[in-house]
Amino acid sequence: MDFSVDDTTAELAGLVREIGERLVTDESLRELDARFGPGTEFGGTDRETARFHARFWDELVRAGVPAALAPERLGGAGLGVEGEALVLRELGRVLAPVPLSPAIRASHLLAATGLTDLAAAVAEGREIAAVADGSSPEVDWAPVADLVLRADGDGLRVADLGSIRVERTVPVDFSCAGVVTGDFGDPAPLPEGAAAFDALRRRVHLAAYQWGVLEAALERTAAYATTRHQFGRPIGSFQAVAARLADGMIDVDAVRLSTLRAAYELDACSDHPGPAARDAVASAHFWACDAGHRLAHSAVHIHGGVGLDRSEPAHRYFLAAKAAEFRLGGATRQLLDLGDVLTTEGDPWEYSA
Image 1 (cartoon, one colour):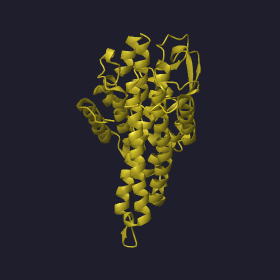
Image 2 (cartoon, one colour; image 1 turned 60 degrees about the vertical axis):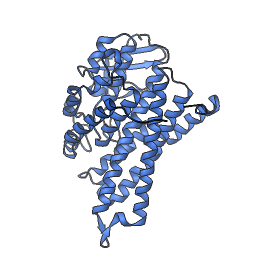
Image 3 (spheres, one colour; image 1 turned 120 degrees about the vertical axis):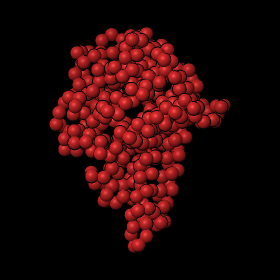
Image 4 (cartoon, one colour; image 1 turned 90 degrees about the horizontal axis):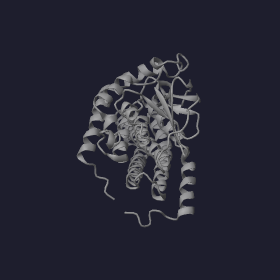
């Protein structure tokens, strides 16, 4: 299977990395923690107190990143779910708290229902969208959103702030989320398979973000192991520490390969996800959860007490990895999904390219 990246996708991902590394610094994340973080999570209810990196989001919008990942009928670059995954990975590397994933999903869902003007407003950053996950009342990014979408078998429902109420919640990583109640209105018809495709797209986005989180956490931990000395030598030279770092490399690679495979299968199924796509997404989620748990704990253990010190960045990677694990439903949940596909459909990859 060819996971090579075309020049357009590579340039877009590189642009996001450059902007992210310049703007989403440890200092800027500390400032967000002071707004909505440990000890301040109930200090306000408006957008100004949300854990939302507005400057980075504005730069992404100005650079045309959400628009490039929008549907081609809206002027998007046609990079597919694989391109989206590579960009989401860059957000995970810097722990960027911006609503890019719901912007991508909302623009595709709105365009599929024919609401092209609203889809364009979301893709161009003039409106911030949040997308509900099935029937769950908690919706990521709802506290800062201008509209909230809910897609299911009946169609797409779109609610604005005038018809719903959002009560902020406190996820383990202090990310932006809230419980949404109120009237979503009548559904607009969606093409067959669109809601199922969106649910899988969301899961690939989460796995891709986790890939970036784990990759950066491993890099930071390896760097720390070369500078922290005990008994007159760097701790990275100790066999037990080196072995955990080596295992971490294998875990990151497993998340990378399984996430790219899931994105590839979604791009190949033309908006009608079959067993191969569902199987690939469940596999990617298993690795994102299982590897995420292992590597998050390895990073904290190798950092020692510094790993839990709020003045240091390591603890944010631990919280982000654990939050992604919880959002994905845990490794056992993914194995159950995978087993269900294998039981009912057989091995969908037996004749896969």
